[in-house]
Length: 308
Length: 254
Ligand SMILES: [Fe+2]
Ligand SMILES: [Fe+2]
Image 1 (cartoon, rainbow over the protein chains, first blue to last red):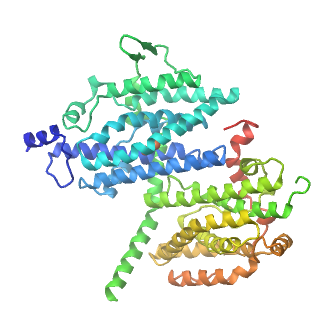
Image 2 (image 1 turned 180 degrees about the vertical axis):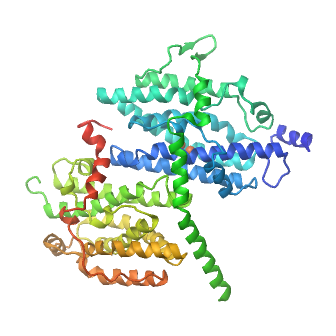
Image 3 (image 1 turned 30 degrees about the vertical axis):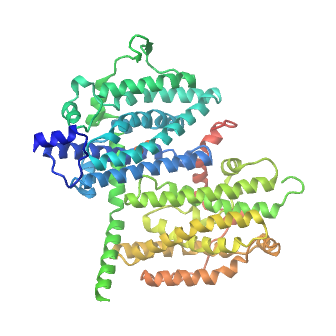
């Protein structure tokens, strides 16, 4: 099957749920899509942290709608995993047991309102750069879910930038708040594109399967090139003394990333790993009786319908 | 109030707006913590609708007052004694049964209230009510379905639901209270006789509880005070959280 499968991939024919596919391809997709789904769901938490404290009613409405969008993204992506034969319940269990991973960025805390701006601008921004190519990936359901998701992420990024702009043009305290948020979120955002190409263990095969279309380092460069001029526009300083436009390359150069921090956070040592996972475990556990009740009620209704 | 402004209408709008604002604030605490993803999304929808309604009522209140206060001044810069919401909406989320019971009692009233306010002599009130009524029809359908599902679900869910509807019962009387201001408003055709809505509300609640296999609470003593700014201790904490940034950075634009 492998050669024939690879030919289909090369020809740009989308793979659909009922098509035959190599186990490795299926497992890679399950791992990647479920990780992505969990990131959307865990990603609700740091931003949800500021919903009840949003500074104006309009900002509150925008933030509520944004965090709701992220839940919706989780929903589409869990559905995409189901097309590969793994139920939502099973996928969620893997998150709660600590077996499955989610994006490490959500293990950092949101300390001020500016963090909500920085997340929209940088984190949704980095996510868009990673995800736009996935709209063209070889697996149909994933590609289609991503088209919808990317549209919404684009709004999120614009709204985040707008928060930063308002702060950057606000009082000295607000500007300092924006700069502090950029200082804290910058490096973790660069890590969102994954480890450097030299150390990326899944990349080559994923690229051959067209699950991945650009390398981690290429995506990171795109992100830096996009954000650096935006930071200038905001009058904020990216916390990297080596960041500089390189006219020969036609790209920004930037300084070395602390990959030890990245691996340490993935291992569970970020500031919020334990709280984030615990929040999901609590929600799941406290919701159990509600889910049981809904199932019991539905079963009673079905039984009544049979009798009638 | 500025000279010539309409204090009765202003207070009337605060009562309507604060109900929506405080309930929305409570519901938004669930965002990211719902019992199942679909409910997380649905509850947030209700929170968003109510927040939108609060903004319409409070913006109009600010215009009527005529002192240049907008929706944000009214939401973030009033203290607890100046809030006019009913006590029901400030009650804690507790568990999903409490959240559902609170929502159901409120929605059943809200839907009746809005269908009356749609006929208000004040055109703006009528317009806002009409827009809100469409949303609240769906809120009531949803909360009724959950009362039935949890009431007639498992033994545990029935017990939790019964506990919740009993505990919140004494906060329902305030919804139908008529004071001096309500009477003046009614005389001007602004809105209905709230006490006249009680029977229809009771019928709807009784019908839903019957289907949910829940007992109708028997208590007759009712809590009151929210509409006059005498709240439970909870409201102070809701406001401390909600108003934090506006209080900590006076005059800043966000
Ligand atoms: Fe998302
Ligand atoms: Fe997003």
